[in-house]
Structures are given as C-alpha cells and as structure tokens.
Length: 307
Image 1 (cartoon, rainbow, N blue to C red):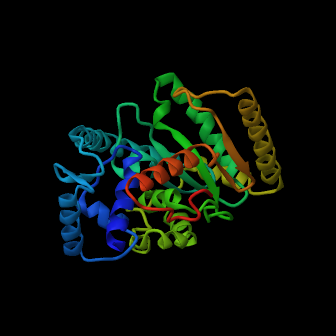
Image 2 (tube, rainbow, N blue to C red):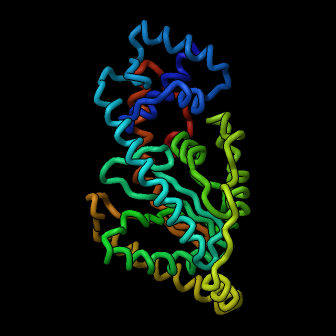
Image 3 (cartoon, helix red, strand yellow):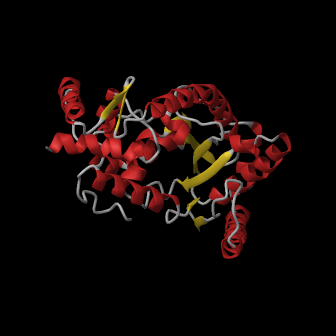
C-alpha cells in the first residue's frame, strides 16, 4: 500500500501539468528508494487494477493518448530551446555580481509548449542582488525590440546570504531537484547544499548533480562594475534599487495589472531575494495536487503543502 500511494503521488503531481511520466521518472521522483524491478512490478499491478494507464512508454492517471502525444511534442520543442537557454545563461552570467545561473520552469523538466518561456534561477553576490537584477532587466527591455523577451524570464533571484528556500513543500522540492545548473559552480553548490531539506520529500535530491559542466570566466564589463560598486556607493545603490522596484511592483498589484498571459502580476521582494509571490502559482498548483490525491484515493499526506 505504501508503494502504491508513493507511485500515485508522483502521477497525481504531474497530472496537474497534463504530463505523463516514464518509469525512470517515477523512480526519480518517488519518496522512497526502491529497485527499478520492484517499481515495474508495482506499475503492472496498478495498471491491471485500473489505478493508472500506460500511454506509449508513459504512465498517467488518465487514459488519454493525447497526453502522450502532447508530451512527445513538448519534449521535442524543449530539445530545440535548451541550447538557446544554455547560451543565454552563459551570457547572463557575465553581468555584474551574478554568481550562479540555472534553468528552471517547464524547460528544466524537458518540456516546452509553443508558448513556453525560458525561465532562469539566478544567484547573486551578497547585498548586490538589486544591482544585478536591474542591469539584467534593463537588458531584457532591449529584448522586446527583437520580440525575444520570452527567452529572458529572469523571475527568481536570491543572493548568497539567503540561499535556503523559504517555502518548503512538494512543489519547491521538485523545482529544486529539476533545476538545471549552467554557470557558477560555487554559488550553485552552496545553493543546493543549503536546501538539503528537499530530500525529505525526494530522497534522490541528495544524489542530484550540483555543478555545471565547464567553467565560465568573468567579462571585463562584470569585473569593471564589481570593482566600481564594491563600496558604500554600491550599498546605497542596491538599497535604492530595491525600494524603487518594490514600489513599482506594489503599484502594479494594487492596479491588478496582468501580464501578457492574462495572469495577475505579483512580486515578493526583500533585501536578499526577488521572486514571484508564492501565494499565486504555488497555492494554485498545490491545491490542484491535493484534489488529484483525493481522486486517487489518497488522503492528506503533506502537512506543509499549504505553506
């Protein structure tokens, strides 16, 4: 029964995203460590019972072949976008005070639909997050001229003083275990080590790769501005840019501004972080996940899922 529930929990989570998963992926996201042979036996038994369905080489809670077709097309498109995302990540790493960059969002799970953005997780030097973010977002405004703004979604920043993710739940644990390291092994390794709590949800988190391939050197632009702003002027500027950005986003929230996808715009800010308000996306996903667990016959199993 425990293994049955563990399998259905994985399928229920990815069903929120209409995403059937392979046997290997189920094994990777399982909340217990078992041999693959044992998992395959359990999957066959659950399929016979009608608890899950095999679609091509994937497994799902729904007997809908279109889900497998959608996934295959999404995987193919992700294969086209990942080289672009890696190239852009290496470029973004050249900005001042950037210490680590990873690819996040759906692309980090090897999926991209036709409207997919390329999302980045960015680690900055301590007390220089807002200078780094401002440089990068000024550049992003230029990307609108080429119609490539969806390739530069730099929406989650932390600095090296706040590496531990505040919200701890199955959603953030999966985002952590699937984050793709690209640049900045020092910052990335510290980040993954600071979030070992994710292993409580996903035991394979401890074995995930914590470094990016290759080493990426600083640009002249990066070295120049880091030396220029490594002083009290830099402290003042970082504080000023934080207050300015926070004020602008508060006004957007009050007005109920929407992004190009029709979603309410919201940003949670602090001295050492800048990220989408977890009350928005996370709450929606965790609520849908809880609903699917009930449909699968599994009661409340994650006391922190509402965090």
